[in-house]
Length: 187
Image (tube, rainbow, N blue to C red; front, side):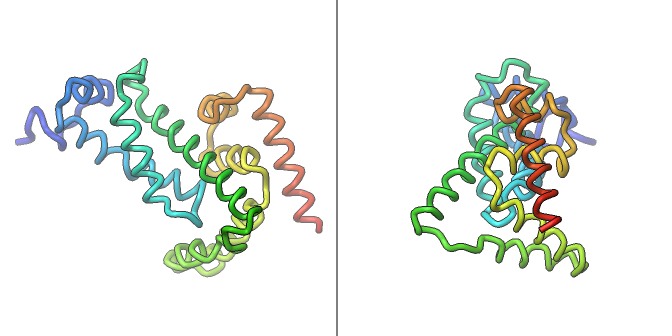
């Protein structure tokens, strides 16, 4: 018999958030167990060459320590996604600055190639590595918007919300990114 209260229970997100806000450790653990794989997946798709586990854990810690800021408890998943996107954007900007200052090596894709080699499909791994190599040179917001649209499958309004941008700005970032991709494929 499954316990009524505990990390393995089937509570809805809203109920878990409310219990976690009240300081119930089992509810925090349940949210963590339920969403750390989701946060890791999104972090890996946004920043595969960095440490996506670290990014996912940082996002989860921020989410769990700031639950009081979440206005709609049932929207935990979307809110966590927003946190992941914003942390990734910040890290990408920091990376770019460090690279410009000569404090970071030029090829961040080596760990991506190791990670994709585990898939067993060398053609798919090479293709994915090439896509991320191209994206590495894109402006941060274009890169994030493209990944959210093409990899995550988010709608424009969701991308705007998660990135903290207007819908018009997201459309411009995507159009610019699409044009840059087309230019790279021709050249």
